[in-house]
Length: 140
Image 1 (cartoon, rainbow, N blue to C red):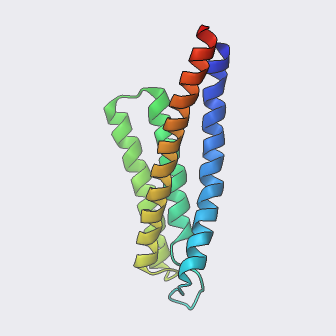
Image 2: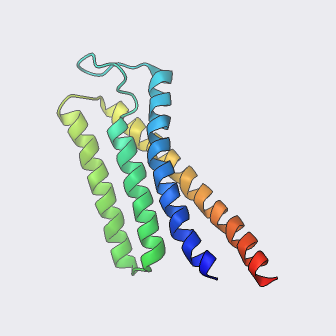
């Protein structure tokens, strides 16, 4: 049983690292694919790296927070609103300071949401399959 208790935090820390590194690689690949220039002729602004990484990191942290702390729905909603507010402010600052177009920021949100969703699904699938394998091996 101790192996099961130690396994989950290590798995989640590994996935958090994978979310961050993979998000950077995902963003770099998308930038090389699209080759768009920004408002001040800055090359490679589509999608917005800052919004993509913000949505993936904060979204995954929120997922782990809600999953483990068993908080009430009020705290869950408040945490989700905080993540959305920070992500919105990051995107608005990119547009306000004329660094990126609104479409770059929106693409960062969309591609970040896709990356976040895929990683949450992968974590849960991996957790369920690993949990079933470990519980079967310890019950024998």
